[in-house]
Length: 211
Image (cartoon, rainbow, N blue to C red):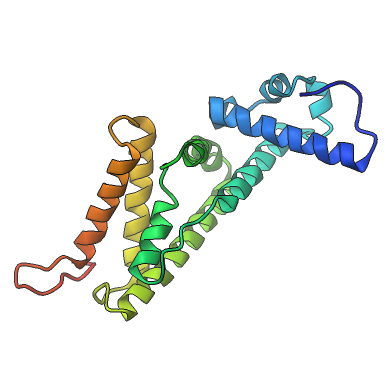
């Protein structure tokens, strides 16, 4: 919490930035991206809005900082590592789902930030790039699974796009109805989806992931 006075040393400045970051995060987690205002952050920090203008001279600066903070926290979360191929693909998709309170907070903030991103061409372009990078990573995992014979032939990029679309839709369902989509059900639904990529068709042959 803010105790008054401006920071006088580099250590004080870094400590204050950590406090500000935590306050921004707590506001987003509690109120969503739409509730992110200088007044709300100041109240969480126990400071004045005047102090915060030292860090965020405009609302756009606060938004950009919040998005950077969200990405940093998302990237710093522990990642699963069960192996290669299909196991790696499954891990990558599980890492997206709101299976823990921390992951739920991150996803809630991401989803609530979509409106701001869609209304700003620059932010929208940035978001499109983030999701494209995620698809590329999933595509590499799909291709590795195909090389190992765990997935049938098909365009890895198309399979990755389908997997990303499925898991993002599941994220939204879980956020709106957490009681109906607890972590165990999310995992089961994901496993059921992955099973459809390798399930045999009626002729007894494994179905193409694009069929």
